Length: 195
View 1: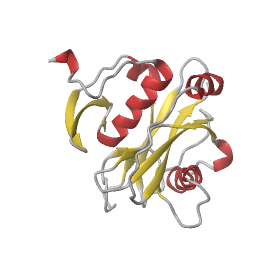
View 2: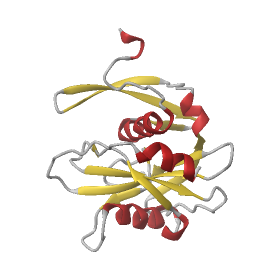
View 3: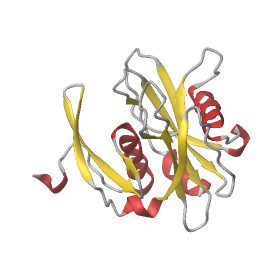
View 4: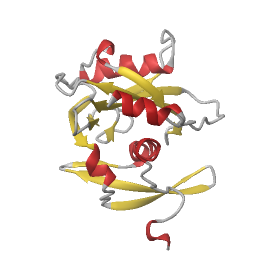
């Protein structure tokens, strides 16, 4: 999996947003399961002040002592789901996205062992779950949300996996990943069906 991701993302130019906002780093964790790679998501606790009860990638706001946003993503992932930084192979960044709370988010694709135990931190995370990448390749979206950002409308898919709803910022990052790695051709600027 690592070689495939490195090859596909080597020529990918992530979009940088020239915006001066607080920064965050998130990890887009992909398991190294041969033949059936999965992506790891979290369900954020209802006790949190932002994005509570929502599906998210592990990660969070940059601390002053973080040497980079990749380091932020690794530190937060360790805090949230108990995955040590030495278990993650960072491959490449994806395009930056802006959260509705005014935070500039940089996602990093990382390969993780499929069998490493993941333990949600109960103060921040209700649960951790994995979704096979093959599910997203089929683009079995439950609905499409029209989201406005910087005078543009984006048509963002919402996916349902078991009891989890993957939508909003997480879905934008997911689509960027699927398009960059698998040429999925999911267009966020056009409504599905082209109507």
